[in-house]
Amino acid sequence: MESRVNKNVLSLIEGDITKQDTEAIVNAANKSLRGGGGVDGAIHRAGGPKILEECIKIGGCETGEAVITTGGNLKVKHVIHTVGPIYRDGLHNEPKFLEDAYKNSLKLASSKGIKSIAFPSISTGAYGYPLEEAAGIALKTAITYLKEHTDIELVRFVLFGQKTLEVYERVLKRLTQIAFKCPA
Image (cartoon, rainbow, N blue to C red):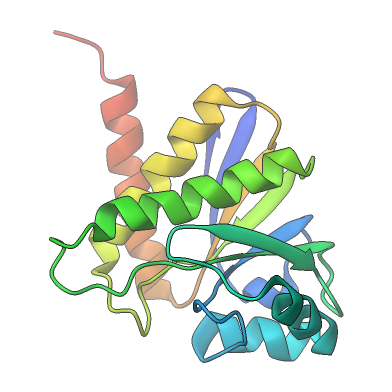
């Protein structure tokens, strides 16, 4: 599914983030940046030791922040590592931290001249963020950013599994209907 925001494209696909041909992919990292399970482990395995070497030099990343490394053995030039929140109950700034993870990744991409970026669904795996709520935050943040910045031409969400894709599609349809609804 694709949607246009100004001249930019927001795309939703089911797939493997390590196989993307965008200039950058985003890693749902942990604070240590040393690899882990899920998306983080897959990116480190596919990207090879160069990514880990750079992550060790960086030293870590706080929740909601973003850092950048090479793409190593991946097709992409860059991996942007961001740390999403561990979901407890939604009352411990989780929505703000999740929004910051997306926003800071986009800002970092812009600052590096990156024109295309692919995101996973941050914090919805092992970190337990409710999928529908996380999709709303991810998509609203991307849409808002693209409305204000024209430098990133493609924001792609690469989603693991048909269920996750369907949730993101439903949320995107709802958000675009709200955005283009005319007053009665």
